[in-house]
Length: 106
Image 1 (tube, one colour):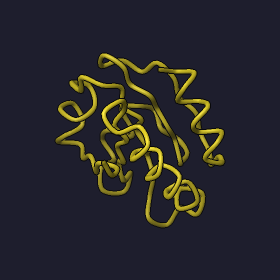
Image 2 (cartoon, helix red, strand yellow):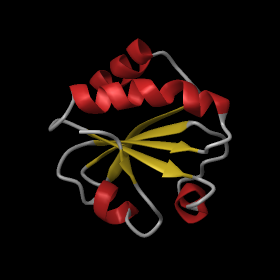
Image 3 (spheres, rainbow, N blue to C red):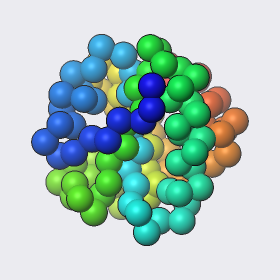
Image 4 (cartoon, rainbow, N blue to C red):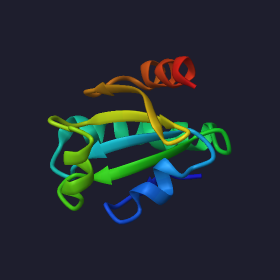
């Protein structure tokens, strides 16, 4: 499964009401570090298919969700489980680091 684009309108349905943990990536098209981690997140979405969902929220198109989550810088990553944030981190990181963070959190 590829990453899932999520909007202000679909955030609750796709993230908070998901029956599996969700990694949410708050990003923007102009953000260099966001583009750096994009391919790693796509690979992780495929590797963890059925175990986690990887959702992407474009902060320029969906400012309400980003503001509600207190996102001040991007990329900002959150892991939701049972509708609650269980972990978060900011900034770009190599795939191995992201994978370790996901494994520790879920």
